[in-house]
Image (cartoon, rainbow, N blue to C red; front, side, top):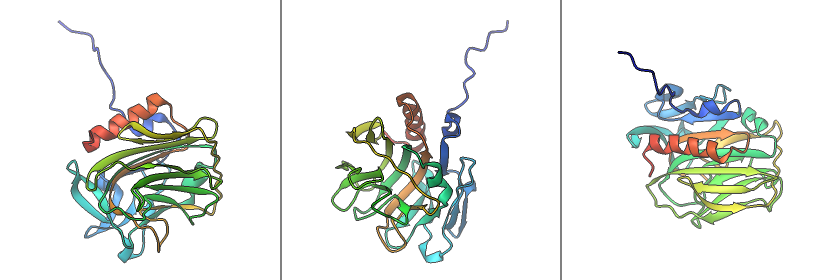
Length: 245
C-alpha cells in the first residue's frame, strides 16, 4: 500500500526571502573562506551578490577558528588591528529607508568596538553596530542625522554567543533584538542614504579605531524591513544552527 506524501518542506535558508538579501557571511561554511594557516584574507558572500569581505594586510586578518560556536567555525577578531572590508555595493544597495541586520557573535572583551560600521565612519550618514560599547550599552546607528541612534543596556555575558537582530524603517521604527526578544525600540524616523564612496568594515570602525575583540559566526544584511514572520524565521534558523537558547 502506498501513502500520500504529507510533508515535503525544504529547510529554511536566508536566501528564500528574495533579492533583498545583500550580504551573507557564514563562517560555518569554510568553503567560503580563504585563509593561510587560519589567517583570513577573504570571507565569501553567499547572497549571490559577490560582496566578499577582504583583508590584504596579514597583521590585520582575523583568525578562522574551528569548534568556536556550537561546534562550528567562526572568525576571531583580536581587538587590536583585525578587520575585514566589504565593497561599496553593500551600502549602495541599502541606500533607502530600510534595513534588517542579523549578527551571531561572541564578545570576549567589552571595549569601544564596532562589530560592523560604515567606512569611512561619519556622524552623517551613519551605520554602525556596537555589541557593546565600553559602557556596556549596545548601539545601533542607521541614520542621516545625529539623533537617530538607538541604545540599550547590552545585558549580555562575555564569552557567550548571542543572536542580534537590528532593523530600521523611517516610517515605522528602529529595533534591537537579543536572541529574538526585543530589548529596545523607537518610533523616531530614520532615513539613511549612502553614496558610492562608503564600504562596510567588519570587526572595526576604521583601520585604527574601535576594533572588536570576539568572534563572529554569521552576518546577514537585507535592504528592507523584514516582516515579523520573516524575522522569526531567520532568527529560528540562526539560533538553531548556532545553538543559541
